[in-house]
Length: 464
Image 1 (cartoon, helix red, strand yellow):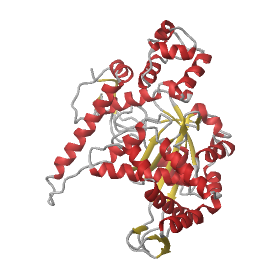
Image 2 (cartoon, rainbow, N blue to C red):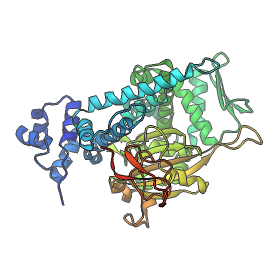
Image 3 (tube, rainbow, N blue to C red):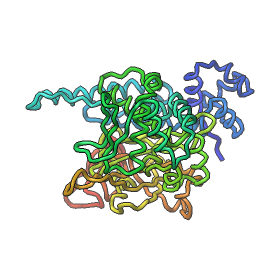
Image 4 (cartoon, rainbow, N blue to C red):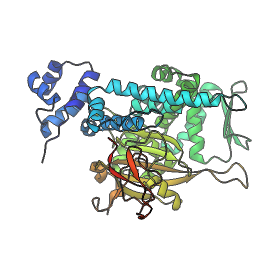
């Protein structure tokens, strides 16, 4: 079996920690010259040394696989293929070198592209009859959570401290939180009819009103959010830092408060232990902790504590129109940053079987495969006659971790693979009957005398 070549990843992790080669070599028990050869991919890494590297960096073995570099490489490929940029085709080798050897420069290019898109959309907003300017802070918020692997130790510590003071079992947590709100903050929780919302806090009246349409687990989450809003401001500010706009700053802080609320309802160590015991059966986890399917999935995607990591999952919430509400990728899944994703991918197929949990082994064009599972979730409509909001919650992990997940039981992981792309505009599969657009970097073939399985035929090689 070929040994892994992970030199650039080792170098990135070392420089991120401010270590010299001598420092890391001493931790590994090897010479600095040998480490230098490893970092330049002139020496392969043995299994024993790979474990030592993971322990030294306090990362999962998957983090040494170069997943982060591949994500950056894919994002660069997507950005440089954007017609808005108008760049000539960049060879794959150059993309790979940039992502692996100059990650800061690569991230700067991605940030510039995001700013360009926002500026274009903002300028377009000036032409609207209302004169309203369009600013989209959602991408900045997503990047904030993605860049931090969706794990925030200060918020975990806060939740653990409050949880220890509450000393309540999961079945008693809602009552315990309501009592803390009342006793410590003089705040009353009232559940009843509401117009135009599901939660409203009146600071003057010290009243938290929750809609009677909310299920029990949602009420508990909103109360936990309110408690963190009152007691977690300092911890949230410590984590949040500065954002480019007030809107992005507000969205980041709300996201962090949601994170802290989930950490309170699903404490890290008990939840991790239960996830391993139940082999990541989400419905069983939700029942044990008194939370919803979506809340349990979201929490699974945050279990990235050094020394006590869970299975690295990606998390996705998408609506029937293909709009992505949330996405995180601890698993290294390279989400398309712009435009739609592959229609063959499980999150889109799950809408056809409402309420049924579906499983798929998805294989990307580069051969990377993920065990994916997804299910629809439905919220109550605001009133009779309105359609109920439906979305799909999807998760997945690298196929190498499939044995730790109950949904892989009974599957022939190799034969079950379904080839997908990131999006039609980036996918080079020529025989896909689901294709909606031709790939951007390939020359189209328009022949009236011949028709294939897809409406778009194109040359196998990208444009020169």
